[in-house]
Image (cartoon, rainbow, N blue to C red; front, side, top):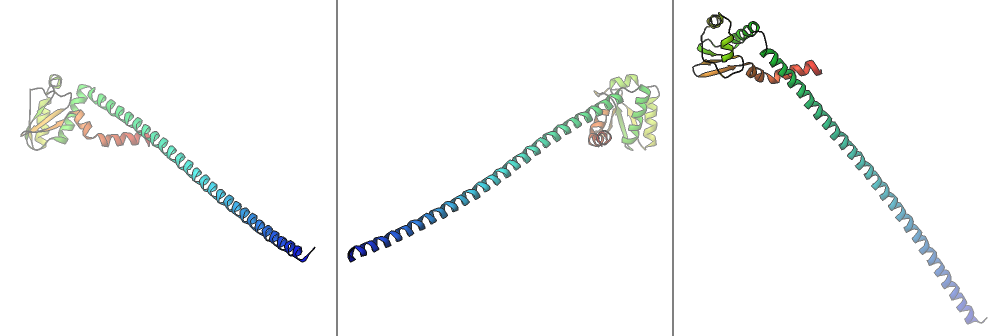
Length: 197
């Protein structure tokens, strides 16, 4: 082999060694990039997985909350229905009292709502017809004891039960329905405590 061939061979060997080194370095860098890409992909997969799990958890919580709200709403509606039925039955019981008991109750209501003034008391036509004898005198006695005077109107009012007091154009509705309606919240609370607590 001549000197020129040796030089060519040496240059080729050096070029091959340099190329092999560059190829090896390129392979190493490629593997490094692939590994980095895999790590990034794994991180993203874990992040997406965690986000999905969190989304599923939030959805389950919202669903459970919605179901609980619906349950509580239905339970509240059922309780309100029961309370309304109890109050309606109480009204029916008051309306269906025996005459003696009914008119005695009306005197107690009168004591509570009458004013120490001159006024007029109105009943329904039905109550005027079934009013016990001497009841007008009892009304006047209660009025005097409370510093007032009441005249019993012979005109029947279109009311179901109870009475209406009139003082100088101002009326106080003392019908059983009006009184129950006025105390509805308080009575509903009492019924709720009795039935549900």
